[in-house]
Image 1 (cartoon, rainbow, N blue to C red):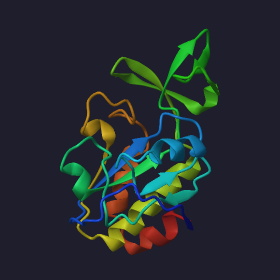
Image 2: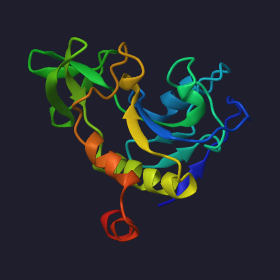
Image 3: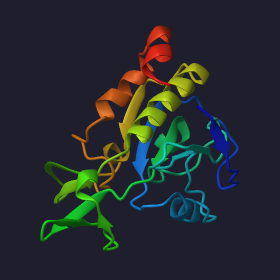
Image 4: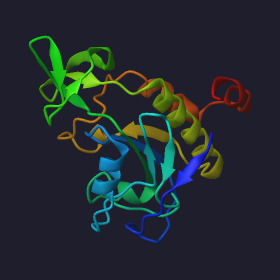
Length: 188
């Protein structure tokens, strides 16, 4: 897998021991829209963005940090991965709509137990799942101090991205403990 570099200067240059990977969802449907939001000069950014196609974009070296879980010390010791997806969607008359009223295909929606008043969520693509797993494997090699994969909701109960029972999160957590043989054969 390749990583495309799209440099951002919207981060801090001091370094800290990395212990956590935090998965985020953009709440938008396009990579361009995600970059536009992240490009604002406010020190809110993530080192990685994963498009619906599975393309991994590195915005800055993950040894540095930016705010991505709120203004907490967690940001300094974590690496954020932003995934392009709509997040929660509303069901209206048998169809699903994003918060911007864009229709989301029903085969890209899952129903979960209610979380923050929401039950229906846009799914990650298989390409995104593979890219997240592969990226977490690579990050573990570079930062052996990584010990957790969490979602943004762990650090902010007002966030809807990745509710606790979102499928694939437990699978992605296994990337931190995968053996080299699993690394070679489970992910292309």
